[in-house]
Length: 336
Image 1 (cartoon, rainbow, N blue to C red):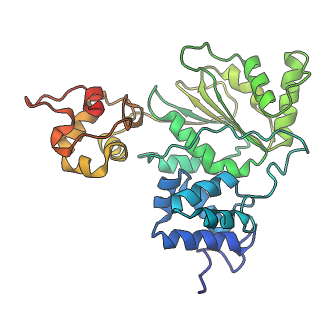
Image 2: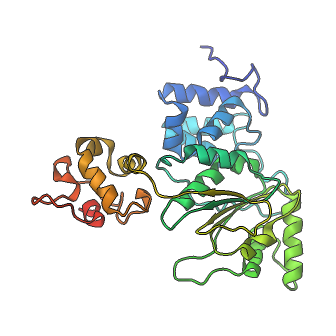
Image 3: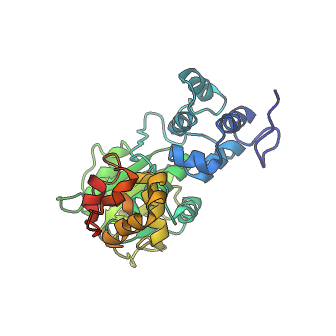
């Protein structure tokens, strides 16, 4: 059987021949999935899947293809054949890095749930990386979904950074924030350049050299001040910095800022459907709206305590509404 080439591609898609692109389209169509549905299942962005299917991703990451194989339900033998195809991710990683250089892959898993109301923003952020002018900054209150947004963006763009992806949480719970010098040494160690550094000035110079020569994506979560980020900014470099912060960082040069806030009712309910089950939410939408309202209206449902950690109660349970009709606090509603 002859399969058509992916939409927008000629008989030989750019980058790595037709085999991988056509095989991915064939497998997705056999699974009766759209690109959007495959994105939800795999945790990759629609843009990343589209680029793979049209051959526009020059060096696909092996992990991306593994995630797609799992989402498509391929048998182990079929998944191995996919990885062995031309451009299938089994080539050497870090082609832009000097021989023997560390190629970190530190990104936490991409969020599996939908980014309700923020899919377009995630695609726009990924499209501008690497930004030549400055870092991309996502700002929002605690629990608004900043980390989920930057991780989805980072996974969508990581194919463009074959020399590594570094992830640092600058203010972990119950710990004091990283200083700028601590962050510089942390990133240098990830890039395999931390040995023998003498003093902060040399460390910063060595980091600038590494980021200017290589294509590295650095994701900084819970940034507190501009001073933490500045040592990672390199003019004209091929690397990129993606930031999540609770407040605006106006003193960062050339930043591209994006503020996110509370999810509105319909958007919050869409995420709640992913967590509790669409059938249950549709069966008792008033109760679902109660859950959203009683969670304060200031947090993404994916950060609510207990969400998704236990099986949802039966639809008739009214999502935590006792016999008297008064809705319980959201934490009780979800944990039953």
